[in-house]
Length: 89
Image 1: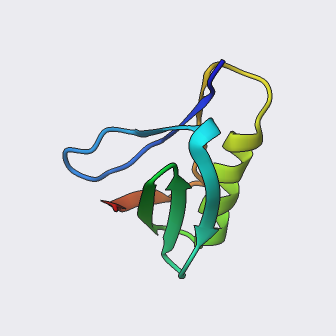
Image 2: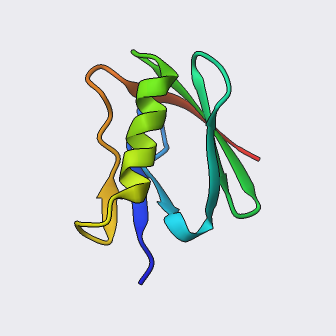
């Protein structure tokens, strides 16, 4: 059964982002404010505010590797962290 992660955003018009963990090949932080998720043919760049990208990156990885819980695992963002920009390429 497929497992999904859900990343909340504050981007106007963008609901929480859901990713099938089976198609995520890599997650990388590329700057002090950006994390990239490589999911199948898509590259999704997320800009975060409120903390270091290391904390956000670790929250995403923790949700991906979580083996217990529901089919959709919410990414628990550190206090004060928000996703402010989403770019899909």
